[in-house]
Length: 62
Image (cartoon, rainbow, N blue to C red; front, side, top):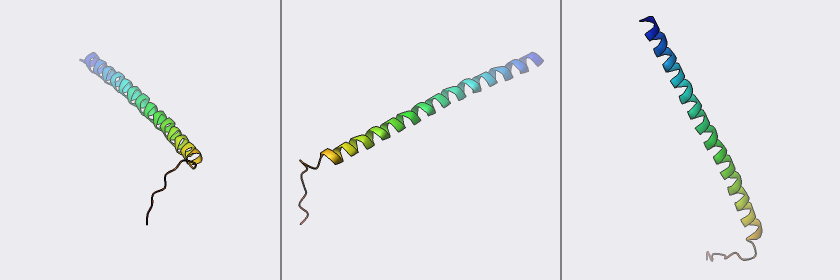
């Protein structure tokens, strides 16, 4: 009976360790994707702001 309890605790501990590693990896991956996406968005917006002055169409608001 003692070894069943110890075995169950070890199995639960390993399961939590694997689950924590997977969730940690997914969180880090999503974080890096968000950082790279934010940099790409800011770069594209900056490029458009600099190079878009010559051919921009103005909206008549009057």
